[in-house]
Image (cartoon, rainbow, N blue to C red; front, side, top):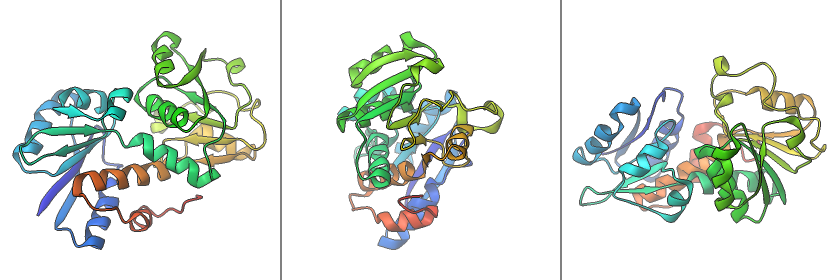
Length: 269
């Protein structure tokens, strides 16, 4: 039996094991996928262990994506541009090859919901998730503006296709077709204020408000839904990035609908 895993801290909420194990069963692959909580100080040791134990690969989640990039023997162009790795494949020689499937996952999720990537987008945040979202939208032809608490930290997003970087204030939230919260604000209820990160009054009625969080409804999506706006959580992105990671690890086309059913979502949910 081959092994695979998702490494994060915390990681108990991850749905990745359900998605990958359902895909293994559907295709008759003798493998199992588990979630492993790895504190930041132990990541390098853990990555050394996956090669020694014969893992076919791992997914990487918060807070390890940037550190994982530095630990890989080689990385693909998308991971290099994002400065983040979310999928590692172990080759026959035990070398670690890093990839970023978040970019593809987010783009496909938006396309499923809207039928296309909209022409105007605003991304909240300046970290690894914001890099992946900005690159995905810019590569699809959108005009992307980034709104960040630390404008200087966010200026590197110009290199990924951001048209402008603006300070974190209500005036920066110009009318847009797509607003994406790529911050960590919504990850846990204890870290989130009752109000959304920025007021949504400037958004037109047809705008889509998206979050990368999939295990709970953050305040931003609740406020958008109350205003009658379309919303998109992180479920679609998770399924599509998992499907891409599955193919990288196994060399087999991913059974997307099986993985979607394992999560319990539909394309337009």
